[in-house]
Image (cartoon, rainbow, N blue to C red; front, top):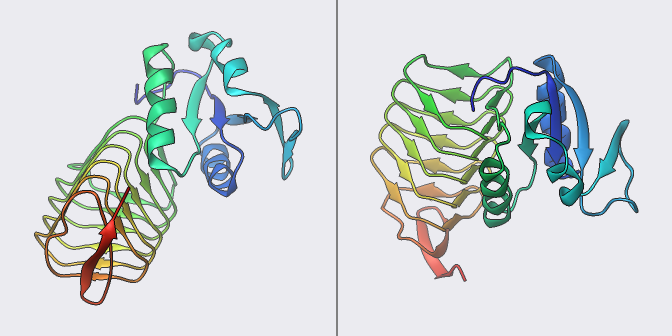
Length: 213
């Protein structure tokens, strides 16, 4: 799924993140089109056309098109990616040309690596992740499937972030810290102790403030 033979990309979701994906895709030589369930009420995103709904996309033969899911909500992104993969669609890794990716890093399908991100040696990025603008993921980090690391966030070596979590913009995470599944770390947090699964936490130092229902 990581080496698309075709240079046609359908983007599911016409939000701001969709614009980022379209920009990356065009720099990689793809032609793009958008699908969104707001169609036909929404027919454009900037100069790009929205040409159908998710159901319409699933009627396009899977061997004719690559697909990227531009949905910020982790659980919804997971649902759509799983449906597309089950139906045989290719979900390429989309990496901005300015990103720096170690040859020893691993990135799974459907993930997007934005401008100026750095992913260092032996880091592992799961399926359907968003590694946003200017993120630093140091050596030996592990990012679970369908997790979003927001712009300007830095993870020191050996950090593990669980599945379907969200680390807010500008956060910093100390080396060897574990952040659980389905956990939200608020913007600008300084994470110096492990954070469990299923919570909302923020601050400097970052602490749990509530359950993440």
